[in-house]
Length: 184
Image (cartoon, rainbow, N blue to C red; front, side, top):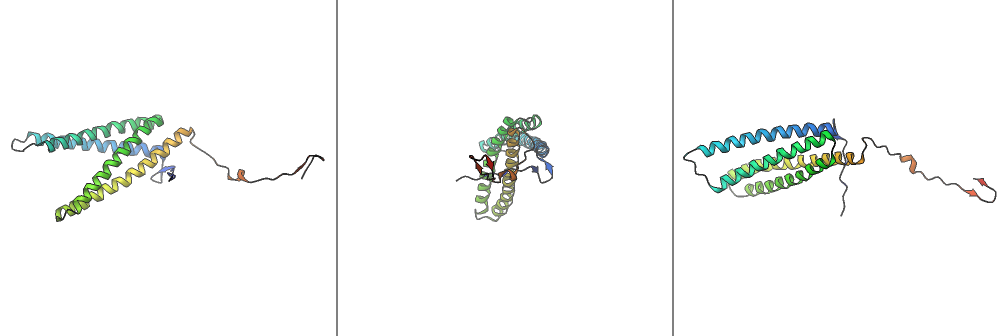
């Protein structure tokens, strides 16, 4: 079964597509940098505590979060460079990273649903809040992927404008009498 992915011409219904994507990319890059600094500070603070037991799960999860945020920052820089230079290959690379991010959001939503139906009141409230956040991140990520794909298609076409003449599809029938050389 095949479906057609919509192409949009504006970001958030008001900005031009490329400008909106650049603004979004820089805002997301700044948010990722702030989150990386906060997680690093929390990680270092927890490591410096003398009476805090450090287990493999704590170290592994923090290293995973820090690595994911570092990859997010690198790919947002690649996206910003690709958007400024109008390079569709770099933007397609970022689009593939968006698919990875979407998969992690879906896994997070599954975990939040597990917490919601775990049977504990705190788990229900926490799972509901986290599930709502993951669901909104999934919707935003899908919208951003559609925007990036629209920009990549536009850049691959090589033109910013495309006009379609629908009146050229009209059928014109002409009868030519070959013997008399007259046109009816």
